[in-house]
Image (cartoon, rainbow, N blue to C red; front, side, top):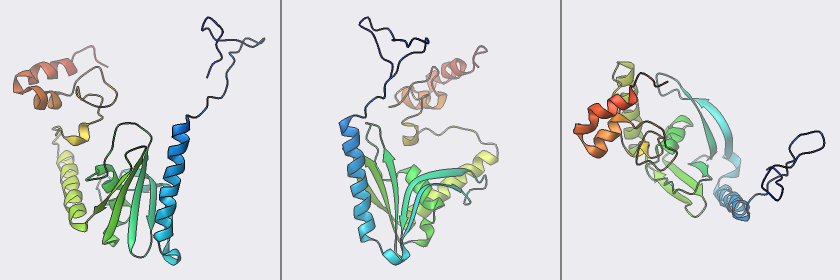
Length: 209
């Protein structure tokens, strides 16, 4: 971070470059990382050492979708009987592992079909939690994703607002960054059909980039 003088202006070295110092990591962030490491170690201690597989920050092609996108998982731990899918969240807004589509996406992509026991984990300061993903729930969710993908490939570009819109910048009631235009489909859900035409016009103005 920049070094400031008594007036709040950046200090400069003799050669004119701004002086900076390394910013410290907040103690609570360090404590959380330590807790997360201990959490993962506890999982490892329960796994079968002879068949243990640890996948860290791995990129993989999503072969169960026709468009074959790529995705990158934080951490997957497997052995002969159990699969753990773990995602680290550094933000302060609570994220639940229950029916978490991001984690189910990772699980399906990294081999959950081969396991009867799949556990999804969110590691987050004050909100760390886990949830058992059953094969039945995973199969139903994956089928819905495949149907949605096929509908898009067939030309259906309708938006379907839902819980997945929580952090979208175009959601006026979102919990993340805000965009300068609101999503027409979400506006209809929130305020009714009477605002749909106005919302569409706001998004489709000629001066928008």
